[in-house]
Length: 153
Image (cartoon, rainbow, N blue to C red; front, side):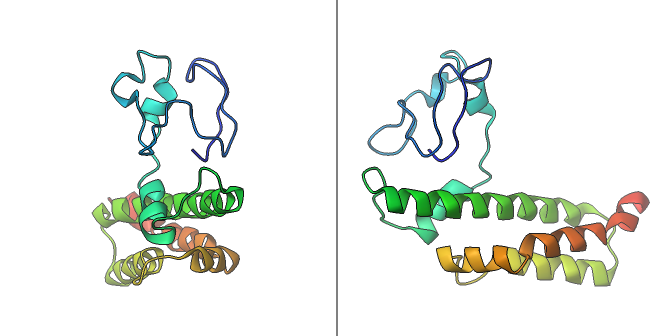
């Protein structure tokens, strides 16, 4: 729902950002999911939100109606944008688990994962605050500190 796309090889029609796709059912599920590629949507078939969309709707905006409420829709889209970036980082930190990290690096990896996956769950406000205080920059710095382990591995 949040991302827009242009008609072309990956999408059969244009969809502006924050507009529901015409194939989105009343249950908020894709009505053509099983035949996306056949119907001209290989971009949708390849897209992976990495869990950001379901997380935002389950934890950040549970039970919120967005289809007729522009303000809620915009807030959800902003939370999704932030959560998607965090999910990308979570994926990298999980992959880094396979590296031959030193004990200090593993402690840093776990500490960053704890920040990226807080308990209690993210809220719209804590997502905004984390972005403003540089959680993604902090995560990139920790990942950069793993370079030597990546070359050892």
